[in-house]
Image (tube, rainbow, N blue to C red):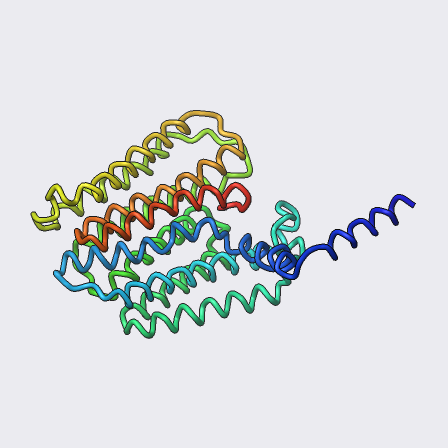
Length: 324
């Protein structure tokens, strides 16, 4: 009798929901969890920073339409990777993360596969509109993502390297819209090394860890990348008007150093490590904003401020939608 009453209660509750609420609950939220929407705020800053830094180094003008297009291309590439990741991990997630959208049957594997293919197609179309170089970089990113998801993620070293290369190539995706000045590569390498270390930490997020001194690769990669890039910039960049760019880079460095210090040689439980990984990923936002602001125009600095607001949105969303 109680069971029947409970069923009637759930049916009444479900019928009380509006069509919009049903759409949000049964479609929008599962897909948001699948693509890890909180991470998207850390993604599009990479190609924007790569584009503007390359333009600054080459003395090129910025085309707002191309800048917007490459940012969306990056987002669709990332969505492709996260969907494909869960599709490949379905059997494992059934055991360890049954609440994820695929094992909980909120989204079918077929729908996920079609969603991933759609994201890849849109990303390649946008890259093709940008030209041969961005299209080539986008293809490389797709290959790296698929190699990681289907093969390399089971091996910590190669998998971490592949994930780092994906992020580094994301910066190159933006630069490809302008050119590849030598001064862009310290930034690419720095972000690659940074994500390699984050991925290394994330591999053990389901068990207790005691991070060693190599956790300081997080701030070290930012510091070395900055020091190797700054000499390529013109003297005008070092004016007082560019204080926002240098402030953002400094904040990213201090934040990652503090994060590393809280983890070093400390017993870190899974829930604490997952939170730390989320903070490490979000630390990319001020790092990206710094390079964007250094372009020096009012538009670039406004864009950097807009990007920084992503810290707030990503932090809020990550409370209910996991970043890892």
